[in-house]
Amino acid sequence: YDSYLSPSCCLPLSLYDGVKLLELLAERIHLTTSSFINISVVGPALTFRIRQNPQNMSAEDVAEKAVSEKTFLESETGLKILQTGVGEV
Image (cartoon, rainbow, N blue to C red; front, top):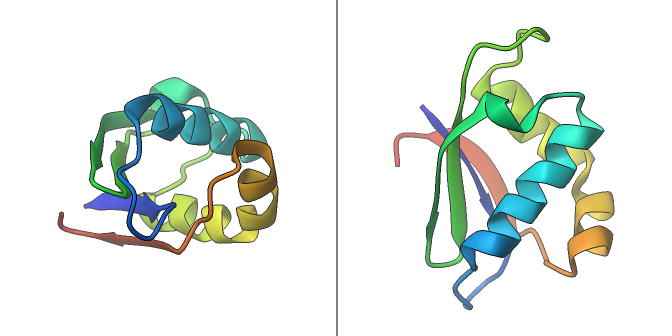
């Protein structure tokens, strides 16, 4: 399953901004950026998979943490996160 973040309503997200968002999230939740794989941007959505990691975080865990870190991530990136979740993309 893929995790996803949809940081903007209508505008396409750049890969640069998507990676920056994941780097900030990884730092906040104590994961290495190498835990995020298959990173891609589709329109306004950022999708990724989580590989096995020392914290044993699943895609669901990362999506939940992204919600709890939403205010920080938005203030640091200038993006507005509208939706997070896990599913087959």
